[in-house]
Image 1 (tube, helix red, strand yellow):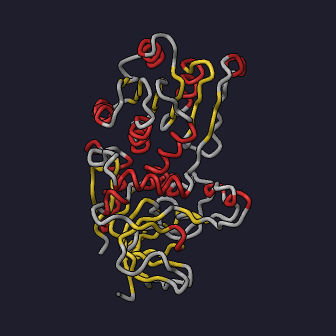
Image 2 (cartoon, rainbow, N blue to C red):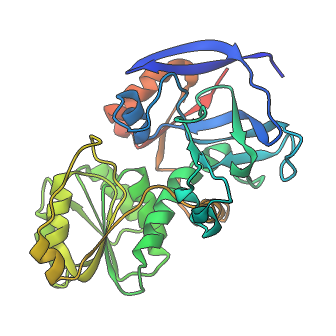
Image 3 (cartoon, rainbow, N blue to C red):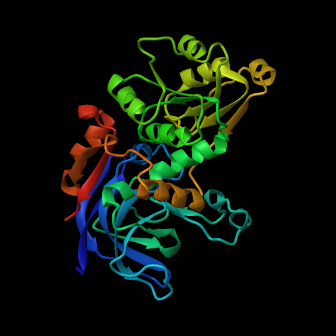
Length: 348
């Protein structure tokens, strides 16, 4: 193993430096990974622009990744050097009240990438052993790197408690929205309606299991959803993208006792979206915020990938070397060439 490695350091707002730094050493309960694939996420831009409340510089981004175990600490027993793995984007203590209840995403002592430890935009990455999951030999590193966003989608659907025969609307055909369509389809709803602004993404949504799609630039989403559901409305809305307009739509289109599951991060940390209290009460609506996923949901998401229950190929659209990081970020931010999920697959 080399003594030094290439790492992409975020030093300040939009201020990156690709430089060589020492390869870290694994502590007793750490695993050192040689990164093979790392995907870009919308959250990266929140950190780049210091719009995430936890942001601290300098840091290394990259919380959707996979790789090979290079070194294990003395206390690590479930993986060994040479194992192919992926990992959670955060670590949990296992002993606080929330962890004891199985709510790992609410761990009172949680540490997360890139706020407390560095991520995967580097050749080697140190991560707590509890976060690491082995992947099957037949699962590619690129597929395994999708476990983290898929776990978010799994978490959203899990919180929605979708029943067979219900009507589900998914708003925002980004990576998590497209994964959410696929996980929701496993619940056997009567309809899965995907809305967005780009026909090419809506076409992919149909490939992923959406029964109906709505381009909101061409059709009125309220009228279309009510038409598709024969006036019933949506029993569940999975909110994976958009802003105030989605909240306005939700309170009008939700069916009585409908559930509005909110995953999309607002553009700014202090954004506030009002709700009409009378409609909220009249329909007995439930609004549920979802931030992250539990360890069990991550493991189940990985199993869906390994068992080929999830379509991934049309979602991964671009690949770059870490040397070309600026082009990669520009591709995501400007949605160039139909970009959906963009990843780094070459690090040295």
